[in-house]
Image (tube, rainbow, N blue to C red; front, side):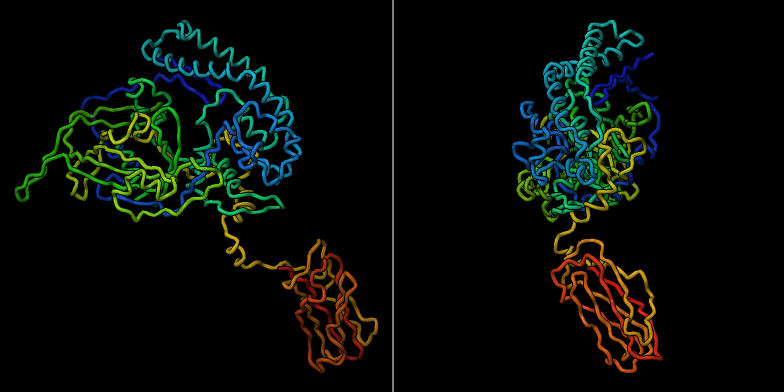
Length: 623
């Protein structure tokens, strides 16, 4: 019986997973469902080129070695760093001295949510100091342990049922693990994590052992880029300034865990040829690659994410475009009229997936119609400064330019990366047959790219929603996606000119005592009051609306009294004669540039008998 060993530490969980790919019976048949899981399999229903219409935006991957989104990305000395000598940047004294505009995205969000006073700045400095005193030693052990895991995996596969703990590598693994666990226990923080900034530093930043330079938020940025509009403008919420980069960072964090569809299996070891023969290195298969790109981008205009690094590192990048540059049949078609194409016999195989892992299934000798294909793909990069905005993308370029790295870099300011891939697909009919389908895995024909870590995508996935199917344990729990959508994102995605053109619904403050009867033939009259509770500087957009329903308005005098003692005669006795009812919209020029806060009074006096009425409207309109 094969043995499985799971080893959890710090940033990730590595599994000594001893699943061995097996072969099925020699003549097991291919089923459409093998490739249908990736999308449309009919060759002629898959577009040969397409570009995503949505703006897929560039951003930062908010590296862990720079404290993730706690990075003060434009604060100079107190900004982003992975240097143990600059831990004092997190002192409370420095935080208090720093202008709010220079604070990190997480600090600004904490301030918005009323949590700034909870950030234990000085305790963070103390914790980081203790951690970094051991970092060099522990990081070396973590790297050594990682290699031991892969060696033990191989040993378990070859020695099913044997006890790995008794091997020299097993003993060393256990020794190292004990040392690492002890160091972790000795450097525990002594404060409650109850802010976004504290969580980010300790879980997505320098507050942990074993960081590698590529660790960061690339998966979350890629998902946000695919699913949300690009923040492009500075916005202010409750007096807190959020630059476009701040909003990108906060959106990125909220996509650290998401509901997604996933294709392929992750490779986490690529150091020898044996590892590169495993399924988790060889997939994504050519069939999966071609079908998913052409169906999702070409047929459905939906972007997705690829791990563009075939090896053990993970670099998630959102797809923008693809183009099939050539598709050459590798089978013969006789020149005689009505002659049928001649299929080629190959050893067909297909990769199948289940909850236990991937399995490469041999289907035996099959007659197929091979097609040699060259395809170039474009994706957006996260290798730009946080503040950089996405340039306009165009697909109106010839094939030669589309596949030229230097020219694409020049055209799009180094924001678009490309890769050209060669592969062979197997069809069940000649490629000009409308019903020809892609069958089997196909074969990669690598050679256009350099190095085994920059070949085909390691895996592909497509974010579906911001709500993961399971619990949220990985993303920062103190960043609220709904708050971002409701309070911050609208201002960050709308230009000042567009904001100014948006009609604003006015706020109406009305008197609470209406309707109020007007005493007939009474010099004392009646007063209706409305109250402006908050400070408000009066501009020429503010107005007052009044309505008096009366059977003879010539009997009435109407006067407005402001909170600062100023008055305005609105209507004098006799005006309007025998007409019914009086309605007026008043400008407030007499009160321009004064504070509206306080009590506004509307005085109405009736100086003649018989006719009566009421004040029915007295309201202040704020735009």
